[in-house]
Length: 557
Image (tube, rainbow, N blue to C red; front, side):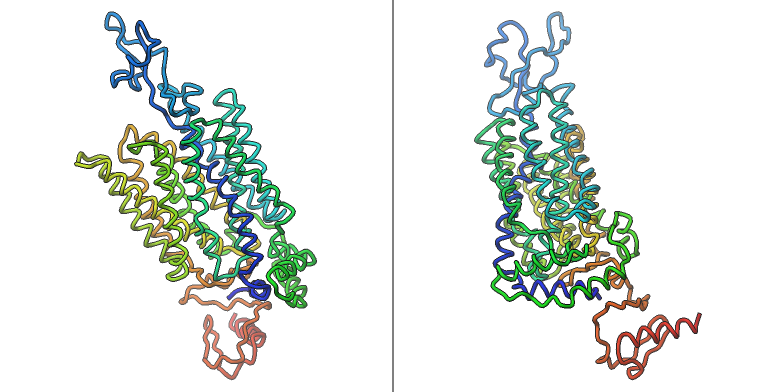
């Protein structure tokens, strides 16, 4: 059962035209912004890649050709005169790929720095995930959304002018912070304008992988990490121009009792959709009743654990987000370990996500969010285990089989995580939706922070990366079994409404809700709630039901 306000807000969307011209325009001016976000997120897959390099030693070391052989490839030391091992003092890089490794000689005893920079970037997302959710719930979805893009624009430009890897790492942290703000607010913002039937579109339109496919092509064309950051800034800049066109979420405005502004946004939606303005006459009374019932309007992460339902949901989702993030980014950042050209491999592991996400749209609406997630996490877990087994074995066509099963694992985590993102957005009430999504985004970053280091470790311990990936996906499938299915459910708006969906059938309890709009006058069945009996003719409406229950419980106590 959802609150009366939640049902009213869903009806407002439908009366304003449902998924009409306004929603299409909103998608058109916001969804392409994911292109720049994807580039920022996975920039280090190419900008931090290690090109081929050779140790130049001995007389005539200015001639590269004589040293381009396996004996000098990636050799930090060489055997000098009198059989004494010496450090390589001059390195030559393959100029077909110019990354931060070339820029600051991040090889040999400094070869762990690129993965450390990636981890620093992900820590920025972790920090902002803890802050941005509360910021967006307090100051609004719109300012948080545009602030995130402004941070990303400036930080990408700052990377170009970095004079050492420490300065570069600091700007990558800011990029991570901006990404965390964006991820936290974007899906919540979009879902609050979208009718129940079309929510899946938000996470299943494959803008993200399409943008990353373009990134692979641009990377192949430019071959330079500085030019890639400039291109990233250029891709983000145009979307800041839409600040005056994009409205604030009317659900957020209502939840903060800013009703005149909410009414203006609703009327604008109806006008653009070619519909008459919906009747909002009862909105004031319903909102005030909800605010009075909830008693306060400032929420925090603590409220995500204020009921058994929210506590259980938050913990189970956290398991899924941590594991999904680790698997997705371990495969993405590990692209240079696959055989073949880095740009082609990056393109392939992204392009396969496009049909996967399109398929997901139909599956989440046909079979539901939870069954979809469970099935693909199990399948992906088994595929990940297969990759680990292949890496530690010595079989024919090892590289081909490893690539095939790695791609299967990647597709499965993309589909499963999409279902999990929908479950996350639809499980939390409006007043803590951004806080909840922000917390899960922050938890996910712990997985993505771990991923670059495990990719680095996999060079010395083959199979560990995919063994952990397979185990994580199987663990997530178990966690998803205990989440509530949200397919076709009305979005909750307040925490009080969420307490009415935590009940187990064996432990059903009557929770009085003076805002309930459910009519019991047509109920012709006997009821027994927590030992209190109700006959079909003993109750005429929900208020009588609540009064009778309270009296009988008081007498029993």
